[in-house]
Image 1: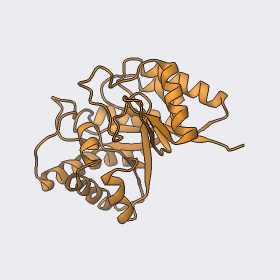
Image 2: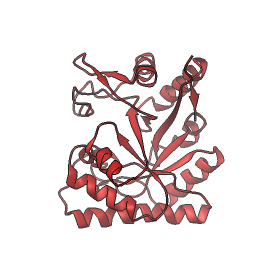
Image 3: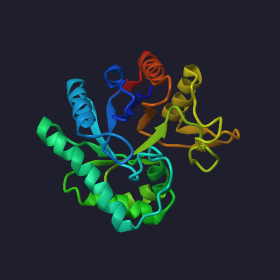
Image 4: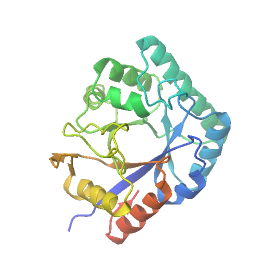
Length: 246
């Protein structure tokens, strides 16, 4: 019998304030560092919680756009984007240094994540940023994406990510949040969705097409309205099925 294991991550430090409740059920977190949300105070608070619960810490930079919560593409030069991402990550690194904690990974947020998955120019900026960090950290990326291909060429360690609370299109892109069926809320449906990814490396698109989707980490968005219910249900049921969360 094959042994299964999965990392469960959540986007945190985004102003929701549910981090202390989420932490017992996740194994890694992505901390907003000023681009779409977050400041020194929230980063410090979340880092302390992550340390307390032995959670892997990631930077969650985005387009510099708090007005749209980083969920809209911003037209900016590669240099300006690079400088913004560097500034955001350095802000978190400063907090980590103060709190004597380590950076484990980097995961772009929102529109930046989705654009880097398909646009080589944007993906290259993210790759250049991670190359400039000068420490061995992982990159959380979508399976079969442009940024994953570039990371492989640059020998950057990466972890394929899938989303527990999002529906997929036929090309493995996420269904736009502007669509009613973009977000999954029913915990039973989410568990079925996640088990299919973990056990069979498959996901069913909104059009009923079964697609290959490899993932070693599963994300639940911290701002999904019933995020705590989803994460607790996933954690309890995955463990009950012998799937280790690590």
